[in-house]
Image 1 (tube, one colour):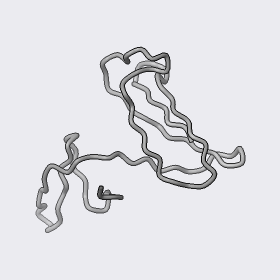
Image 2 (cartoon, rainbow, N blue to C red; image 1 turned 180 degrees about the vertical axis):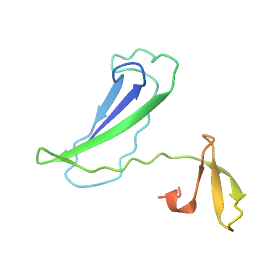
Image 3 (cartoon, rainbow, N blue to C red; image 1 turned 90 degrees about the vertical axis):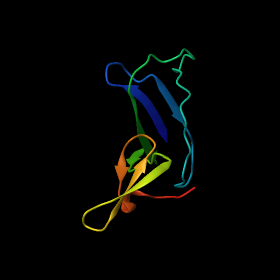
Image 4 (cartoon, helix red, strand yellow; image 1 turned 135 degrees about the vertical axis):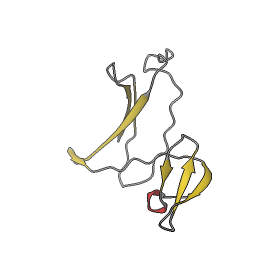
Length: 98
């Protein structure tokens, strides 16, 4: 499995790779440095996850850990969870509670 970090204007700046024999959760955090160890430029970065088995690509699901900072009731009776990164998600978007 490989996680690639990039911004919208440059080639990928950091990659991390793990060898696993079975599907599993894999934690990943990026320290803001490139593969060369230099600090990455200020900007907005995204990540992509890719995996393979027996040399063939397999599907992956990437999750982002976020702190819930509030709950917003909706007019239809549901709630949206307010996340520390400023986004809102419904209950169905939550995969794990730590």
